[in-house]
Length: 504
Ligand SMILES: Cc1ncc(COP(=O)(O)O)c(C=O)c1O
Image (tube, protein in one colour):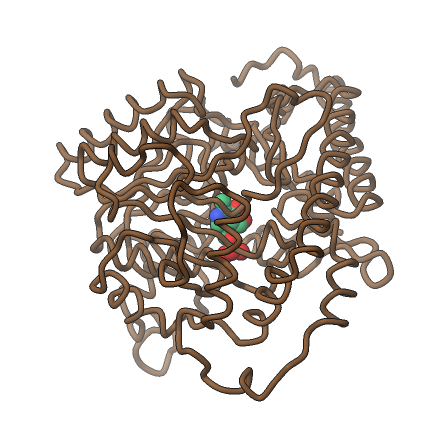
């Protein structure tokens, strides 16, 4: 079960020196050795591609884990993922539903309505927003543009609203994929906003955005927008309408884009421990929103991966109700490369138009999410592990394993530095990044994967995102593997007298 995390081919520093605008750590190079016949492989590629490959290092680590995933029959020693935000709690129901309901017609074999998705799907998505999220206006099909997953949608949006080297602000901790969506093609700069001194979901956070925007401005970097992840990944909480409105005001005061990522909008659950949690409010439902922000700056993104438990179908949409032709023409120009396949288009609109099934599916999913959340937090309580309490959205809990970092021993002579020297969490005590990576590798070697603070641009090493939406048996097995790993860390530290070390 040993996970080969050390397959780093060469540090990517040489590549990043082309222009290093990302903050990824764990960099590694994906290219083979130089071709001795003539030009090097690197020389034969564009600078753009080399930069993108360098920045993909963290994702490449994950891809390797994906290739050794647990399967009860086929790969029982594989890694159990309690790290990826995939919800399999309703998979069986969906498989049966689609097997019964998906009927392909000749239309599905054509180019259909062109990039942006079928008219039927756009109508169905507009209707979902109108029916479920109480917008203050009517969402219309012409406001909706579909593409390959929310990652694809964000790629289109970033390409449309900003030029290379320009910046997007996002409050820490941050869903790891945003970094890639921003940089992979459009080469935008992610500016993480530190919110460690305030409630990241509260209005006080906005002054830190303001401060960071001024820092960027002073450095000659143009800030083009911000993303509000609502419901929040990885915190699992929602913003109040009042806070959303304050963010809109902030964006308006600098004439920057306000992007609301609502991909978890229907993955809301209730448990006895979160009765006071803030319910989800869509940006479109905020009263008086367009009185405080130029409407063309407002965009919502939504998708099929989370609320419809279908990450593999790769469907997402941009809803941008106040934009003129020029904006949609610009999105469409690159949208042709993100043109969704007709089969997932058909699958999504079938379920969206079947209101009876959809409503039952959403409520059953929410019930199961609440039950699995409870299994996870009961496990935390049993092991005295602190976590961010009161979540009510998404599939994950932001968890504090800092006490275990102090118990990790660095190899003899190790200076605690990660090769490549990059970090997503600046200003941490020496060795903390390395200890964090060692702890994470112990987990992976122990057969369980969770996302680390480094991946999520956390404020401190030692925080992890635990997902609870695996099938129950897998969740429980993953937690028992985790228990073994953490117990072993405890035992080894006790033997070596490392308890007294203080790395926090
Ligand atoms: C907040 C957020 N936005 C976007 C995405 C990407 O979603 P998709 O699978 O639609 O590309 C994810 C996936 O984890 C996410 O958590």
